Amino acid sequence: MPPPRARPPPVDTPAPEQPAVKTASSPAPTNAVPATNLDGPALPVLVAVTAAARSAASPDENSASEPAEETMWNEVDILNTSEQPLAVTLVDFSPLTQKTRSTQVFVTPGGQAHISGNSELPIASGDAISLRSAGFRDMSQTVP
Image (tube, rainbow, N blue to C red):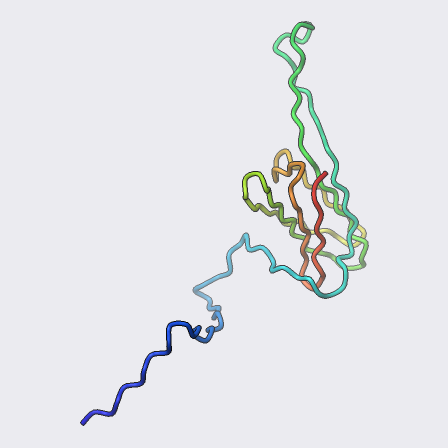
């Protein structure tokens, strides 16, 4: 007579989580966003979010009848106040579109990085932005 089979776990009992295994055949994604970090020291950066605008020239620049069309966007400047280089990921969440986008910049000690919302990352007023860097607490704010 064969031995009795073990019962499967009940449906409401979660199965134990298996750790992710990294192998040479499964590289990490290149656009991976660092995990949220609410602990640790403050991120050693100063951040400025500013609005920018550019007027597009009308077809006939001497014509005063049609005003020039203006394009607006936001820009982010990041100043590294530490004595170590930082890889800083800017994560932008748009409540209007429910989309999350990110970009990463490398900032030298005492250096500055500039992110233009016009071309690199569409940063709109009302968006929630977070700055993340490994080993530091995230810094978040709403774009004015």
